View 1 (tube, rainbow, N blue to C red):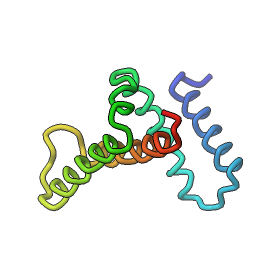
View 2: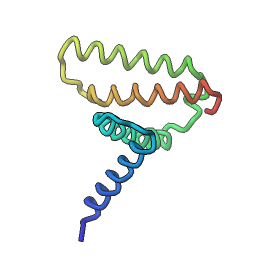
View 3: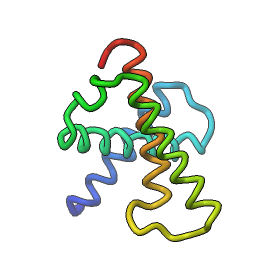
View 4: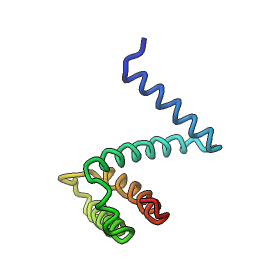
Length: 112
């Protein structure tokens, strides 16, 4: 019998393989991209509970663009200086940028 963590991993792998097959993907690295995107979806959902939707709807694409600009400046500074950040990691900032890209696309479609 599998532990709950093992069962969750088995289900995750099944879902990932299903997405890969459903989309007709052919590259192995796409499995890793799917994993990252699934993590992004989860983080987005968690943050939405904390922030709500008005922080985006108030300023639309311009607001998202400002947030993206802040993340790019932060990443530029951290990467060029090779400093270890005190707060969120470089990886966290890259993940936020990925999510902001999706948010901007939803806002642009008028679905926010």
